[in-house]
Length: 445
Image (cartoon, rainbow, N blue to C red; front, top):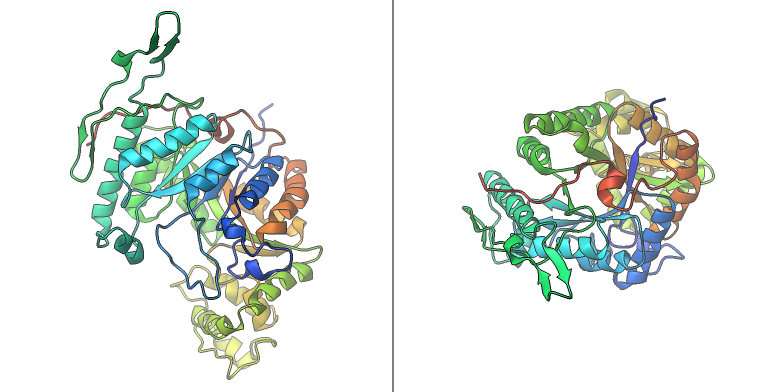
């Protein structure tokens, strides 16, 4: 009997507070969680208890928010956060973003492979290009054009993988009697020279249990599809509806096939946010509370909601605690410029208040479910069975209790429905993702 396909789950760690920037003010949350590595370790251990395949840390090497009222978007340093987690966990994967634009390939190769060895084969590198002007300024650079950034990314990834393979699998002899620590004939320079990067090598680090770190990618467009199809085993994506998610996953699989790879060796993880309550009303109330901490943002959110449905909305002219007036609703339409708009219009037509439409997360950067654990599980099941993704990158609204709520309430439902595994398949990230062994690469093209 063929085993039913199961989804995979990644936990987005954000900066330690959760997916909502006002989560740091919620009672029970450690306001200083940003610098408390025990906080990251605790959430990761809970996710491991729930058999999550991995934790994922996004990153941009720049300050991207106003810290007057909001928390940072990313940890102080993703690699150090993962190092703390690595020493306190055994199975869960450890994936971090690192820029191919502002980091030298040798440094990337060294940091990720060392952590992969330390964690016994549980590390992944999310290779992304960077287009944030603030990040470029931190390195004394200007933002390069898209074509150039992706050309740099191809070179960076190929050099990194060549460095990872420059210590051959059987080079480490550890011959105490003969006095040979390693066979230097099997630890050789790579001598790669590209237009943007070069490296002599070798990298003096042996392989881990999974060979080398798993490569991930996040980024759209034709360039992103090519980068993912050629190199990545995992892709983080941000679709807002079932059809666009399904199309993106299929495009990724087709891209992998064009490069002679097995399409099953590339897994797509769709971003997803949640607020869990004993009832749907409790789930919404969590989000209303989060919104209440930043009342100064409400006017801009209302205005943005209006633009999504073709209306000029203002807190000065409408009561946001009431449904959208009938005359305005009759003129509303889903903007073709924003894939989140159909969901916003659907909720407005249900006759709920404008505040509650916003509480449902219609302007968030991932789809949001505010409701019961069953409703969250139903959403994930619907998307997964529709072929939208191989798994989900889940973002709790409030990390301090949201991770535990998901593990204790949602995971058992998914397991009972045969949609999520009950035990880890192996000890390495590759085994738990179900992707092929890989070690090294060859040349820059």
